[in-house]
Image (cartoon, rainbow, N blue to C red):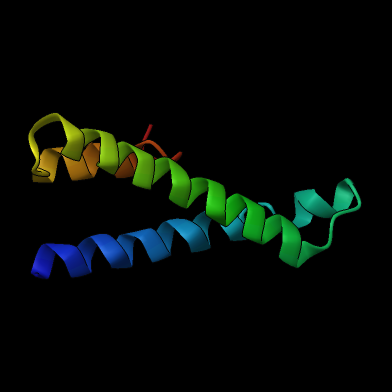
Length: 79
């Protein structure tokens, strides 16, 4: 249960980090800030959820390494 809570909180963090990073950029293309933030946040979350789902499909469980690798895909500062 502790790892589920950790994953959910990290997903919320991905949404916030992805969404907040494009608010200004969206305005350059005429998008409302809230729409650009929602689109970027959802894209980041979708990337993580897809990676977690693919890892789970392999063997029916998620290791901490697989979880960390899924989140590393959207953590641009880690690379």
